[in-house]
Image (cartoon, rainbow, N blue to C red):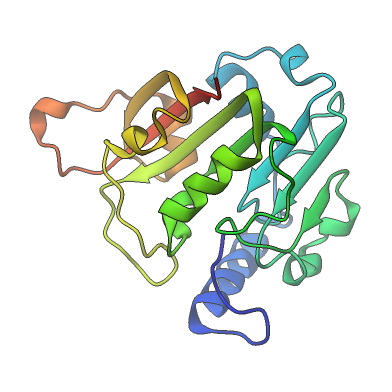
Length: 217
């Protein structure tokens, strides 16, 4: 997710687009086949969990993170670069892309059943505002799914360094259902997919990946 102006290409925006262009060149096309695994197997939620639900992915990128969820009634990805991502073929994805920021989600209060943020919370300039927005748009009984890098040095594209205690910021507005800490190896998705546990005895400042499920009371 980006928190940049939409009128021109800032260095932060250019870095993001360049990153996706490199990935597309390396992969041939931007794959999205692993997303279903994370939404279901990784978070221990069956495919039927999403039937009839309204899904919102914050900082969705151009891969088509929700195309797998064919039983949902609404699949929306919000990203400040949604229009720029059309060059990567997003118009062919069976989900909606909306240009907007996580700090001000273009969604009504309590209108979403499942919100997800995969490798996007540390991309924001004001993650506290994003958390408030997640709480606002979730309906009572709704679910929030989080995957995020922990203890990573800040960069232009990832300006926030988050610690393991980020889960505390969501509470008590959201109830923590489960959380798992993984060793960082090759990126947030690869680390969580391989499932190597994080050894806290070896130092709290080492890099890792946090996976968590929250529920709105």
